[in-house]
Amino acid sequence: VVYFSLLIVGKLLIRKGRTVCWKTLQAQLDTLQQIACPEQAADLTDNHRVTLFRWQRFSWRPLLTHPKRWPQLLKKGKHPWSGWLKPVLRSGHTSKNTKTIFWAPDDSRQAEGMAGYCWATGRAERFDALPPLTKTSNNDNRQKYSERANMPIAMVDRYLDRGRPLPRSLLGMSVKTSRYKAWGVLVIDSQSPGGIDYAQADNAFIVIASPLSVMLEEL
Image (cartoon, rainbow, N blue to C red; front, side):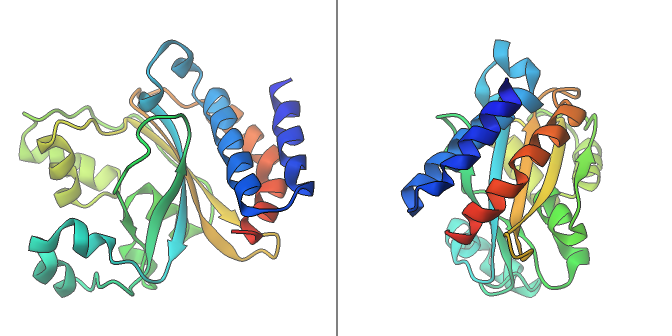
C-alpha cells in the first residue's frame, strides 16, 4: 500500500508548476522517511531524516556562514564557484533551516560528506554504525568519525561544540533528471546505528526514481 501511494504521488506530475513539484517531492520524502526509517514511528522525526541536495556550481553560503574562515576556505580551494551540494528539501516539518552545505568540486576525491561521496561515485553509498560522539568526545574519536563519515573535522567539531548530534548511519542515493543528467543527491540519516532499513529504502527509491527524475526537470 505504501509503495502504491508513492507511485500515485508521482503521477501528480500531470499537473504542471513548480509549486506542485515541490509539494509532490515533499510528500515523497516524507513517505520515504517512513519506509526507510521504521524507528521514526516511535521517535522524533529529526532523528531520522531524508534530505534532497542539489549540486550548484556557485554558492556564497560557505563564506557567509563562516566569514572568519574565509582565508582557510579559499586556501583549500573552497571558493564560491568551486561546486557545492546545497540542501533544498527535507522530510518532516522541523529542522528545515539547515545551513549545512557540502563541497563537491570537479576533483571528486575532495568531495565531502555522504552527499559529496555519493555525488562523486554516482551510485548508492552507505555508512553503517558510525561511532557515537558527544560534546566531550576527545580529538581521536572525533577524527575517527570524520574519516569514516567523510566529513571535515572542522564540521564535526562545529556540530559537537554546538550540542548538535551527528548521524550514526547514512545512506546516499544519486539522483538524475529524466535526461540522465546528474542533478544532486538524496541522503537518509539516522541517529540510530541501525536506524535505516537499506533494503526497504532501495525498493522505495526504485519506485519514485522515474517520477522524481521528471520533477527535477521542472526545478
